[in-house]
Image 1 (cartoon, rainbow, N blue to C red):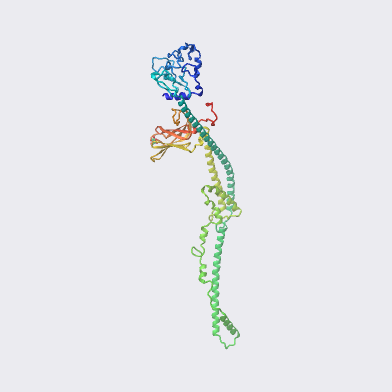
Image 2: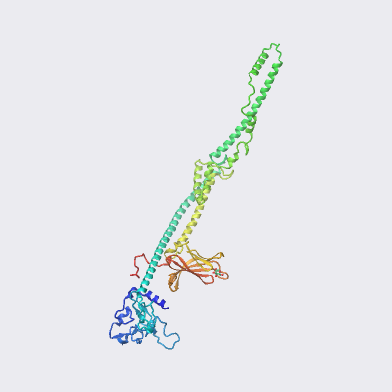
Length: 562
Ligand code: MAN
């Protein structure tokens, strides 16, 4: 209890109270010295009409109603402002005047910081070093107690701790400034995105109406055309169709030529037979000049006829060539028609080779290009399927659809960004920088996690799954009343920011889980403690630079420090 009082007193005193009360009666603090200047008389501070002889100051008898004549003894300690209120409830005795004009016994504490000690501690036989490091409050040596002056070592340690605390405060403030910078950058990024999305949507509106007009135009003009399919795709497709037709034509011509050849061969054979018979059967005794000349010519023809030679190409080979093309004979046209697209098809299907994220964008650009290529005669325009819409109509339709889809998705992005811009992100929007980051700690069988601006989660270490303890709803302010912790990881006293997380997973036979996340200033984000104040109502205590006060740049003194 005494330690706590000491801390309170030390922490409430400013540097100005370090001044010693030289020449003043024992126990008088610097700000009261003026009341004790007279060497002869003394007027009670709270009751100046009551005048006493100076010798009654510190005579161990409480004469002034406000106790001001006993600044250096415990005689008026029952009036101590730091003692319980008098009279105690229900007490029939005692005075109702509980106010002592003096805050306590003043210890100068040279080498450290002067402070007031409750009057009840004066000469009680206990050295109260936390309050009175110079030991001056035990001047009567009650029970032989003699207190040493420990102000040098206590003061040194205090200054070390205080220095650390100040440095930590500076580090926290620097971390806060960094967060503020990040939050500002992020906000500007969102604003930039909104501006460019608005511009893109404006352009898309124009593009959409242009593409709508184009699609309708193309559809109208294509409806009137009778499209004759010839091959597939572009030049290669056309060439394929032409080559197939040409091969078919050559094969049929060859077939006809073979038939003709066979006819002529039959005829020659018949004529040779006739002439051979004539030569054998004519009567040489008849002087028929015409017959003689014919026989002579035949004999010359037979004599000069070359012996039969093996033909360069056999009938079998020709018959093979004449067989219809198919999977195992000649050219398998189906293979060429089905597998590889035409050169135009490569352009038609180019986006299939692209990564997913770029596909929609490129698809739209390509469709516009296709329409242009088709319209300018650089791409064949023919139906995708016989009787279906032409490539031109398809490309125009797809370009329009792509623009519509892009418009829809950009509108959704714009709405999302605008929602984000209007969302509450705490003082100066600092929590924008923390969004998405998480801190966690283990307590018992659970690991607890806080994801800033997101949700709080209870994770079972035994693998029983995760439980949503609430989703972020709003910032609130509540008053904390806790003693300071030695490690600084506590809420302390005063108004604190509280983040409300609600509508978590339903509690069995109870409400939905919710969490109050109490914030205190710290150098880094840390989840200090988690408790369940009542069933499914949780409380997290969290340190973060985002909850620090603005203490300005290091080196620039604040009002307190001046
Ligand atoms: C689980 C945990 C506890 C909670 C009970 C309620 O065990 O989420 O925190 O109190 O459920 O049934």
